[in-house]
Length: 224
Image: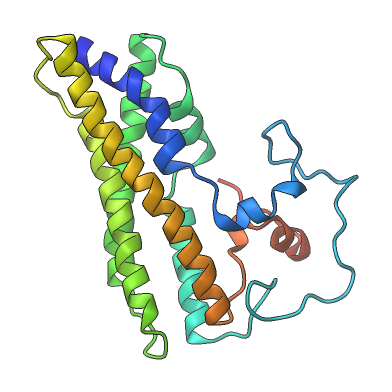
């Protein structure tokens, strides 16, 4: 328990900040719609939304219903349904402070996220890519692998391990996982860029779950 507490305490913040909770490309594009306190409350006084009917098309509010648009919407739904909730994020991001109850909650939450990510990876891999969009096959595979690899890191963090005999051995374990986390963080950013580029190419609207303007126009926000 002691070695897992040490390892988890040092890595939890790095893992969450670097790999799991990087804002989506759409969320980054719309950061001006939120206040600076880190809340999800719209900043009503300063937001200027268009009054005219939104234009359909690539990265617009909506898109003509095509098999490719339907595929992206299905992916967005799956990621939202099986992704980490706000409560999960809060528990995983909370300092452990060497408290046994917090370590236990972190472990249980990480286990849940890992299971969901494994399921998400399998589900993504099984989706049928429209024949008119061959580029989505590679994107699908890369996204599924990212979720599978991220699940693997969580599983390694919570898996019982032989206690490190020295501080150097402990640091080697930590550095090994941090190296994997850094790789996943870089890959995540590339996937977000790839997602945006593909939506432009295939005339697909923005992700409803991460785009504030879409939520405003449609008159509803996702709840978890």
